[in-house]
Amino acid sequence: MAPLPAAGDERRAAQLRALGPERALFRELIAKVGSGEHTSTGLSREEARTAIDLMLTGPVDDAQIGAFLIAHRIRRPAPVELTGMLESYRDHGPTLTSSGPAPLCFGVPYDGRSRTAPLLPLLALSLAAAGLPVVLHGGAPMPVKYGVTLAELFRSLGIEWCGLPLGTVQARLDRHGLALTHQPDHFPGAERLVAIRDAIGKRPPVASLELLWTPHRGKHLLISGFVHPPTETRAWEALAAAGETDLLTVKGLEGSTDLPTTRAGITARVLDGNVERILLHPRDHGINAPEQAWTSLETWQSEGLAALRGEGPLAEALLWNLGSYLWLARRFSSLPAALDQARALLQARCGERLRQELAP
Image 1: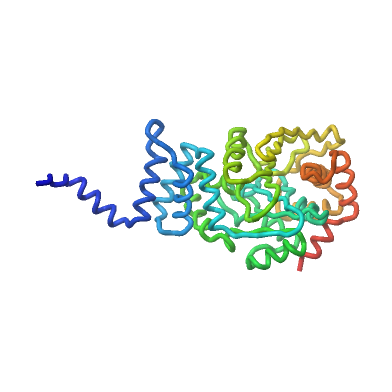
Image 2 (image 1 turned 30 degrees about the horizontal axis):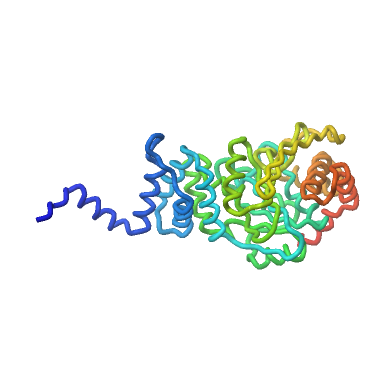
């Protein structure tokens, strides 16, 4: 006669049945990442992918998601886990394609900027006007910083990205070489996590996906911002495993891809697994402008419009970023030649003309 199960085992089995298969599986994944320094095993690539799948598609509850996010935040995801998580974002997020030149796909923090004046919307308009397509993605104001977002900055320039069908965004990429997917409109599964991120009060590992993921499919140059050196090396490994063969990592302002003008810009080009460290020294090229502090959207609007005409306090920083990215994208054999072209583009107001095309 078989021994009777212990009361605890029987109750545990009944509780797992009550949870349902998805929530029971997710509980096991929480246990793997939240068991402590000595017993936590981490997740395999497939397990990490499954965890994000379950969070994005909704069968697990908010308490479980919060537990997973804070546990993973504490132990830090391994590159193999980031790869699995990235694959889930690719499966469930919006998709854009292009048939012309390979676009530059920028990944910057969704929680925005609060200390320095952003350049990326101005840079994106200028690059697209120069024939280099740009793909961006972002969201509404969110934790932990609640800084100004890409969509808000573009809106202040007269260009609306919120509330657009994905087909309209694709049409803008096809016609104008510029696109921005907006998480509340195009990625509701990820948007569900925002309130939970606010509740835990810390950036969870899914925030790293904002820097590593792009909605674009096909050949592109992925440009990812970072703050801490270990983050950069984890990104290299995770993206290589995910099949990204052309990558530029940038230690930009506030974790963005905006190159500074007051210090060397630290970047690295990773092409087919080969890493080349590239330091960009603005003073060697006559760039001496200070970083402009963030004050208000109204001030930025005025300064941004002026910069697109090659004028005002943001103009020199825009020139430096435009020339640098034209060179880093290998449109020119030397940085001085790229800067000369950037200066000509700003003097011709090419970015401003594209802004007028996109504004209502």
